[in-house]
Length: 313
Image (tube, rainbow, N blue to C red; front, side, top):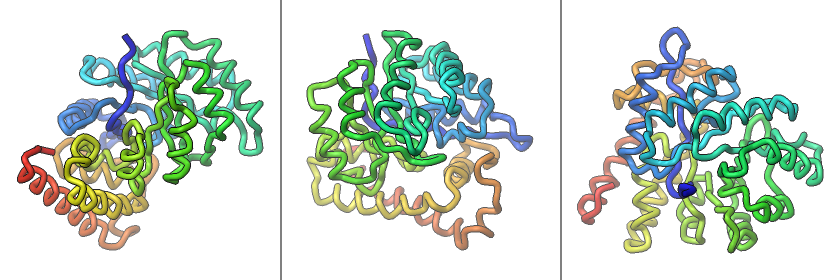
């Protein structure tokens, strides 16, 4: 039976040791933290994982370790194809598929060059579909790096009609686009999962199948509560949604390292090392520690409020 890849889906971090190797103990603690805090699936080997800075063998190891550690508690999907050449992507995706993940995610900006058209993208997808297992659920990810490639309505409709794709991580950051895509994919297997915190609550209200944004690395439990219970408490849901939007503005301050510092404070990680962000955070982003502390304080406030409402976050 194909697992449901919807709901609150954290984009997984990759912890590193002081000597820049993957911290497997920290990764295991992180996986348990996600699940204990409301994750309904996990997205491994993605941009938050610093996949562009990982060797193929490291990407394979991360996906396999996640599958083995999760032990079917929630579905695990993974991407990890960073090459532009079709032959290299076939190698990368086949290797990820062999790790036992519940789904493999295609990155849209790897499927066509910036100037490419829909025919090029669709031909590329067809070539990949012909080599991936027919029973393997697939996703689409409009990854913003090295450039954002949003899918056109024609491309989304094509993917939906193949029956092979189960979700798209929507990075349009536009509520009207999300609504249009929801209408376009109605009665197809393709679910629309928003990735932008600024529209997380209205997108869920419009029918989006979950949330898969970077702030799931700070407070996934609050997004889970909003998804599951927000409609019952509309006034409080609006207050929480406002906090989540404002808290997400810190993403521009050295993410994913800022999330690693957060997890270092929680005891998940022993080191805050990042291959993508190597600067001194406090020097680069003035008052960084104070801002992160306020975000954590706000999250605690809303968790306490949710407890008083009778539903633990």
